[in-house]
Length: 342
Image (cartoon, rainbow, N blue to C red; front, top):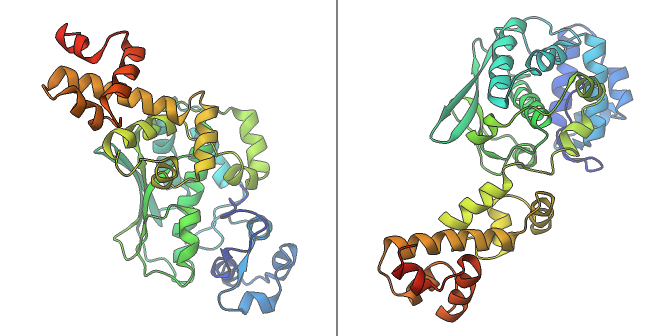
C-alpha cells in the first residue's frame, strides 16, 4: 500500500525527521537509500538540514519507493518485515464489514497477524470512539515517533476512505515529548494534540462507527495504486457535519453566534462550512431555524417564562420577530401554542 501523504501538496511542511526515519530503515537492512531519495528529489544535504521539510508528493514518492525496495511496509519499525501488500490485505479484510465500527475492529484484530510489536484497539464510551496503540515491546527511538504517527494516519485514512467522509478528530495524544516539528501535527490530526501522554490515540464522535462502508473491491484496487488523492482530496465532506452543527448551536450558542465562530469550533473555514452544508442539501440558516424551533417548543412546553424571554433565549432580538418566525414554523402564535398545549 502506498504510504498516505501527510499534508497538503506543493507545500514543504512534512517534517524531514520522517524522511530520516525512512533512511534509518534502509540502514537497518544494510541498504542504500540513495535511489529512494533521488526518486523524491531529496538531496543528502537537505536530508541532514535541521528543520527541513518536504512536500506531501515528495514524501509519497519516497515512501512508495522505500516500501517496495525494502519489501517492508513498516519501513523497518518492527521486529519483522511487513511485506509489500500487507496494508492492502488489512483493507481488503475489512472491506465487507457492514459498518465502520466492525471494519475498525477487524483491522485491529488482523493487524495482530502482521506484528505483535504494537496492538491496536477501539474503545467506545461517553459518545466518543478512541483508537489506541499499545506498545508491546520497546520501539527503537529512531522509528518510534514515525511508527506511531504513521500507524494512526494509515488507520484514519482508511476509515475516511471506507465511509467516503471526512472524520473529524476530537483529539490526538502521543507518548513522547513534543518534537521540534510539533506544528505539523495539527494539519495531520487536529489542533487538539497532547504530548507526553500514556499512549498514542485518536478520538472521534462514536456516531461515525454506525455509518455503512461505501466502497467495493474495484474502488479498493484503485485506491491502493496511489494514496495521495485518498488522504487529501476525498474527504472535504463530513457526513456528520449537519448533526455537529446542530449540537453546537444548541449547546454553545453564545460561542457559535456567527458562521466564522462556528466554523472555528469545527476546525474548518467559513467557506468550507457553507460548501459542505450545501452539499448535504441544507444551509447554516436552515439549521439555525431548526434549532431555534426545537428550543422554542421546549421552552413553551416546559416553562412559564414570558414570551419575550423565550424569544431572547432562542436567539431572537425581540418578541415580534420571534412570533413571526414561530408562526411560520408551526402555523400558531407562541401564546396560542402554549395555551392550547400543542
